[in-house]
Image (cartoon, rainbow, N blue to C red; front, side, top):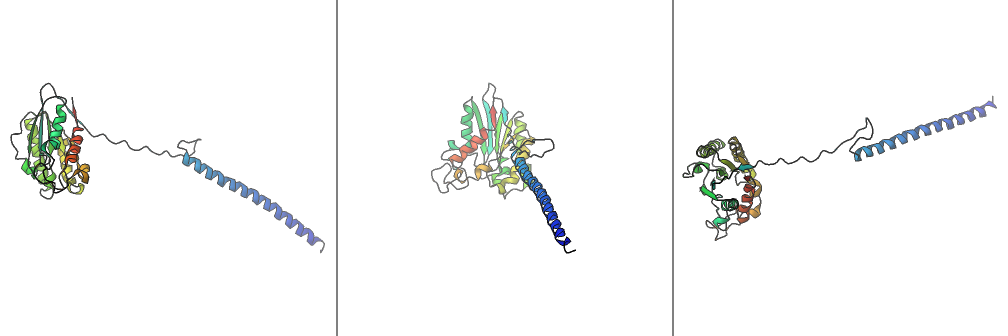
Length: 262
């Protein structure tokens, strides 16, 4: 019996060594599997196309294409282009260095480059849309009408009343100029102030087949307004609210971009 004990211990150590080898082999396989999985994950991250059937991949979607804004197609014909402007003090070039530097005269001069233009305008400095609805002698059979209203309605006119007044103005224009093309300009206000009015302008204008342009992205740029207290400008002494020459030029450029004369 004492002689058999060492043989039992010897067989035990041999079994341990064999088991250790087995576990090392299994561990190696597991480790290789983990490494392969990591490398596979890296490959899936860097490749946008699958490399084998059943493999996973992810393709980064392209940036969305900006939706192009609608443009008015205005037929000039052989007669002079008849253009109507209705608005408030912005239409009247208030606080530009001269009346000619307002967006309205700039637009008319630009349109004259392709032919004669007969422009009619009506505006009310400080007037709201209800005031503009009282304008008269605005002509008839216009080819193009630029309507710039809503700025002075903030905190003065309810949305319901504004909708009624604005709709009536557009209807009046269309009734005297059945083939007119309408370009409706948003309010010169901070977005949080003018948004509700701009929504009405856009909706009512498009209901009449017109095109809407927001100018809020220009209004928020301080370099396009004022400065206040500048004398010698058109209409008196400037404030920090109305456009300056650069602001009026930016408005003219934006609106001209909405018109295609053919």
